Length: 466
Image (tube, one colour):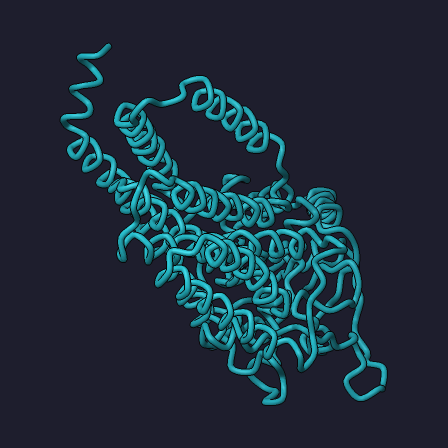
């Protein structure tokens, strides 16, 4: 066993290099649903190499504590992976980000308290940055979890006092960090960590629900930078590389999502959207008229169409309707209907939410198209079926300069011949905005649970002899 340990320790850099290459291949694989499984396998192997190598490099490891933590973490992880519902995936991801941030803070504190080690200027900067990024990631991710899970304690903060308080907290955090850097003062380091936790909460709390997908993506980036900070603290090159990959990829994804919303990242983080709701049908106080139809009507229209585009939204996730949608898709395909799916980059509650749901139902990847690929086809589409989506198909983004989402690219479903929308009610979407699409003459509202309504559409088509 000692020979194995010596061999691994002597070749640690080579093992870490192999792990780093596998992590790069992981990201490459995750760039497409077709290669995502392979990418995940690369990541699993890379993480196993990193853990085993680091384990043999440790000086005097406490085996029972390390192995116990790994076994407990594996049990909890496998249990959550098997039991978490797809509707709960966004808040689960946010909660996992919080653990990475907490780990960064814990390691930074443990390193600072290691009295036998003298921390130079560079080390103090690393500890300061790693700790405050980790602390912000921790509290911000906890709030994002609460917001996505609709917890009562995750209240959106509004008012003119919020931004001054944010500024004061940020300045205080930097000031205490500077004091620690100059004097090596432990109380200053503790104060900086506590203020960073409070700042993380205060920073995310004012952001409205409409921007939460971008926040989740950004926190993913932060968790990566926090991990990289841990790597610098521990002198672990593998952790630095893996954290940097996660941090940079999360930042790129955040940029892509902001571009899809036609907004800057600073505007999302410090401007806020969706913090004030607009009641459905109450723009000028006058009631609006809309047409309501049945699932049978929808089934008849789709079965007799030549082209159908399905636009999934959070309502599909909430109703767990993806398998019923797959059945509808297959049935229409059998009837010779050209059926495709249109995905907006910020549909759902997290990046790629709709893609994951459709992949879970084994919908062919070739028929799942992104916004830029499908928008030009709506004008020649007979029927569009919108399932629980609101903000990503809201015409106000193109037509109303006073709308908070004006300028945001949307799925241009209004160009289709007929539009059908499945919703539970006429309530607003996650951004709290009314949608003029629902009141158009060629729009038919179908009220009810997404899964139940789609199943009724399938029965209607089958019963009609199609």
